[in-house]
Amino acid sequence: MKNVLKGLLLLLIITQGCNKSEVDELTPSPEYPFVYSKLNQEELATEIQDFNAINSVESLTLNEFGILSGYIPVDLSNGLDSSTVKNSISFIVNTYAHFLGISNPENINIGTDFSIRLTGGVNVTLSDFFQNGENAYPSFSLSQTNLEERDIEQTQISFYFSTENNQMVISGRWFPETFVPSTEIKNQEDALNIAVQNINENHSEITPLNLSNVEKENFRKVFYPFQSELGIEMRECWEVIIWDNTVKTLVDTQTGEIIYYLEYGDMI
Figure 1 (cartoon, rainbow, N blue to C red):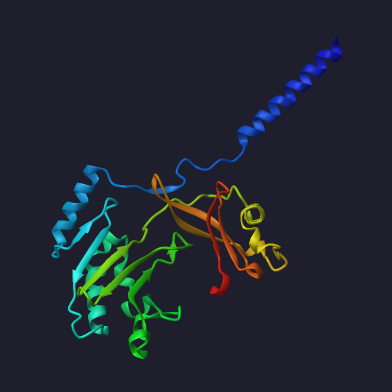
Figure 2 (tube, rainbow, N blue to C red; figure 1 turned 135 degrees about the vertical axis):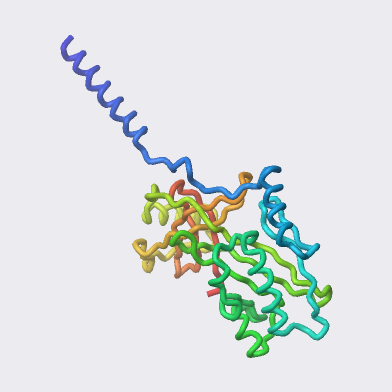
């Protein structure tokens, strides 16, 4: 009888220990991920009121996130020139910074911080483009590179100059804030294993993988604006790059989800 009771007691202790382990397992903070959602009617009305107080261009408006969209008239009858581009972009950035998600417009240098992709696929600064007279699609981009001491990817504001319509079209946005997790639930080893499993199961055309040059300890944490039904989720990810197979995977540091996947191919 004593042996039976001891056995039941031992089983109870083991069961409680398992349950405690499950409870103590790390889960993402309720504040994660930080979400930029569509504004409700009251919020949007407030933003529109503030926007109307400074706006002087009828063709500009705010979208459902309270972000600037539309175009401004630009005289391009004599073609695209440096002064027209700089003056047009400066007007938008300095006047509507808040509605583009830009916190410190005074720190932006139009000549060096804006880039344009040449016909051959190389990005150059706005100043270098006009100085060297290169050929390119007439769209200049201002990329956000940092958020809360992390690199941020796929985030830019674009200014497209239409010589046909004499317009500069504005699209895109920056993100001024986010929630930064205090720790990672998935470490670098986890991220690599998740990335490798995904490639083996869904992208077998680039296997076998060569992991000999992968340095897990050098994986960077980056933010990625992930589109979901909730809005734009700011996901903190491990950047897993397998150089020998020219493939990049972003793995969420909190959930282990694959947020972004890219095969570089001939890009690098």
